[in-house]
Amino acid sequence: MALKNELKTGVLLLALLNGLLFVFILSDAYYLFIGDLPEGIPYSEYLHQGVYTLIFTILLAIAILLYLFRENLNFYSKNQSLKKLAYVWLGLNMVLVLLTLTKNSIYITGTGLTYKRIGVYTYLILTGIGLIFSYIKVSKVKTNWYLFRMNGWAVYVLLVVFSTVNWDRVLTRFNLTYAKSPDLAYLFTLSNSNLSLLKEDIALSRHAFTDNQKKSLAEWELEYLRGEAQKEWQSWNYNDWRLSNELR
Image 1 (cartoon, one colour):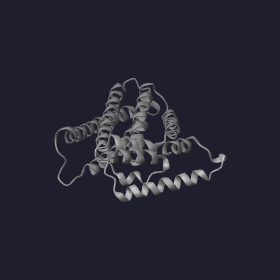
Image 2 (cartoon, helix red, strand yellow):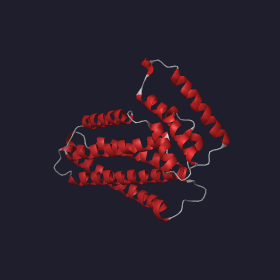
Image 3 (spheres, one colour):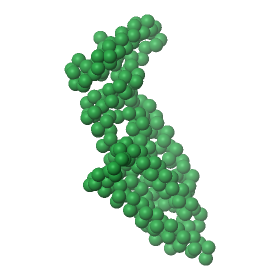
């Protein structure tokens, strides 16, 4: 009787949560694709609220599944309704991930790419992977430890892969090429890696850099080349070698 009552409670809980999340997704999609944002709410705040909501719902989703699909409920022969509702719950959360991904992409296309926005993409990728592993855990009757272990490996692999990318050059190239209204001042806060890209953009007059920014870039370049000339061979690395050749 205790198992049956737990099953009924789980079914009711997931049904109510699915209905609530479905209504939220409809309203979110309406503001994103059809209607205008409420007055007084800028797009940046709209995006941040979506990310915060996503963080809360994903943590809630995984916590509920870890609680419900533990021990005996995993093997109860009449748990099919609970599993179906769990699949719907995971699917709705994946839709929420895609909506947030769309909002972040629209924002980036307009104002440019930053490290915080890359962080949003990273979180969305890890969230999608976590939802996939949650589906496998429920459908294949895996343990809770399986979910923690696989998500841990996903975080580790993604961080290793991302550490091989020169993000300062990626940010600069994207913002100068694709962003409609890039924050040029932000690009001057990055490392030396983007010096040649800024110099090239100024030479081609693609964007309206101020005279102070042009002067600052020339001083920055001169200081960098002087520092490189004083380095010994032990300090050699590919990125600095490539940048020095590009500047010269």
